Image (cartoon, rainbow, N blue to C red; front, side, top):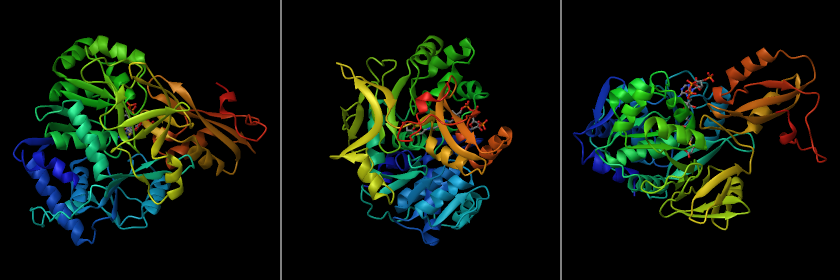
Length: 469
Ligand code: MLC
């Protein structure tokens, strides 16, 4: 099965219905179908086909959707790159994914051809709008590679198949009762599985009307809700903390037309849950997922959405807790990391995927996440592996040792803080500036603390829990 078959009830069945609002333009499903057919033909004429990778470094836009659909139709593996990434982070993905080309609206140092979205769209407009023959794509064919920060310092590509995405979308559309009559406000980045695997797929499967934002902006969020009047919204906890800043009368009005608010990508503090209910009159549905598995566990649509918990496993998904760690099996679970057999082997035990997340389960089946086996930091819903920042800091000639740890933050959940040992005096403002140039903004440490030495155990391992609070 090709994922497109799942979208055909919208792309073909609802061809005249409005599918998308983006900036001042609207597109019907039929228009999206035609645009992506033309683009698929253009990509095909440039030599791309089943199994090739195409890297995409774009902010949310209709061109990004065209590209995704064109890739899915041809069996090209879509490899989105976080738009906040800088050259060093982009370069790693370009080397690792080994793509045929990169699509980017900005200048990027790249070992492969770089195509601008405008140029591609112009070239595609000369192509036929009829759907190209869909190759006999197997459901196990990769549809996308999503880079997740790795414990080794460089990120690994999680390979997600057509079946993985399909299983996820079928579950969410069914369990959350998403229908063509819904109005979906999509403000999450399409380069991550929350925006892509949940947002885009649920929209295209259900045939609802979506307003896509280039990004979530808290300054204009209230006006956008009132103007579009959505029924469905997905956010990360940072977004919900921002929504708590809405005027109470506006929040009530929004609560009146909204049907479902979903939160994920980081733990939602129970206090935010309660304050949100008081302000908007809605109980947020919290769910749990990962790039490697898409959605695993969620609170029920009907029934008790219990604050502080992530609910029960979705249909078809088996979960167990071994030595505290959540392990999973199901049609949503990826097949492995791109070209990393060893990392893939380590990620599974007897066919169960090891999430690295620590949880408990109540007698009535609700899972509660209570920590992680790794020192992963989640800031505003973006994953940060301290090791990557530590390695970057240690490249600095004046820094002899570096340790990065999470500190709590009301808005972002967690933020990274750097502890460094220096060989010579160092201008910390310059160091921060250097980080800003070379690292994605969310990875830039919020503070730099110079220490005489790092706390280490007898084996020389840094004891992060002993770093200054
Ligand atoms: C954030 N920034 C962006 C941006 N998002 N810049 C450009 N484009 C974007 N899309 C930068 C800002 O420039 C700023 O940088 C900093 O982030 C904070 O910006 P802000 O305006 O103060 O935003 P804020 O209101 O705090 O909201 C941040 C946010 C962002 C919620 C919009 O954190 C975000 O988009 N999070 C979503 C992450 C996500 O989709 N995760 C899903 C992973 S999948 P500076 O330099 O000022 O700091 C996954 C699996 C699962 O985990 O289960 O879902």
